[in-house]
Length: 415
Image 1 (cartoon, rainbow, N blue to C red):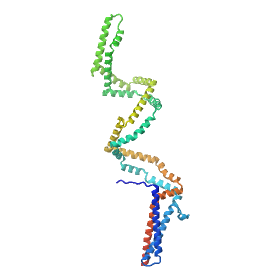
Image 2 (tube, helix red, strand yellow):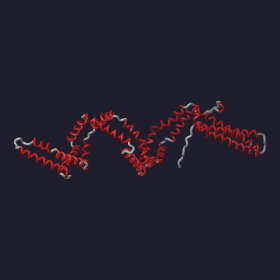
Image 3 (tube, rainbow, N blue to C red):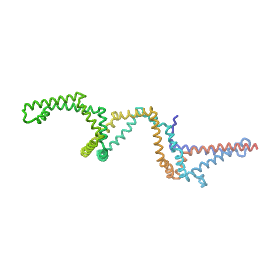
Image 4 (tube, rainbow, N blue to C red):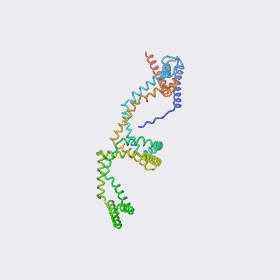
């Protein structure tokens, strides 16, 4: 069952306190009037008089008790009155200790968080597409502002001071070798090989004169010209046929030889010291080239611009994917009990750890705030919040006093 909490402002509290004071004081005056009207009369009126007299005593006693909490009754400096103004700092420290000992204990927090099933509630709310879209819409402006702060100078500093030094320190040959082996095993490189074979064949077909010129330049000077021309055309024809065969035949021996070479290279990059040294030396030469930094900055700037454009488009692919991903995450949080349990435990451990570390700083706000209050200000604030309920003590004291007085008068008559 949900409980609705209504916030009440200070003006409403002050009006409620004033009304209850008038009611409690009015009941005291009523008892006084009844006492005066029935004074000295016998019979039933004697019982009424006794009840009214005791009711006045109870009302005045409880008025004194309630008033003594916040001020000196009638302005008289009676000992042990005006407790709140005199001991506000002690009350603040006690309240801080009470909250710490009873609400911010690890077990209480953990049990409360686990019972709340925060992860399940978040998942149930997040799996609704409109809620996921709302989260993305609210987060997109913050992400855009964060990305906009990355100007070209900051990207250059990041590339020059973070990326390049880190790449320089880390040996890349084992990583490159392992990646190359996996690529060859999966056949992921074949698309690139197909592209290279097609481009080679197309280039040879379009540049016959250039190819023949290269071959002719290697021909012996003593051979007749017509012989060199025949040999040159024959060489070009065979080279073009070879390129076409490599392009059209997925099982061509050149392709298999290339696969074997790449596999050997991947293994050597991981195991052969000489190959690794040559690769690292090549890496150093590449990193020393000034264009590497400029290229990294250009890539970073392009990526930044692309992300900003994607975040600004509500119907774009990026925000759509983000919304879909969040909705999918919400469904997984609801349906996967093991994931729920792990995340609930993680949330509880995180909150408990934060409270254990920063709990004293949090609760010190209570005592620190109360210490900064003026004594009269503290008294007025506390009375404004609890004073209306305390007036019921005066009402109860009047009524209970009247009933007790009536009972005592009855016993007296019987005796």
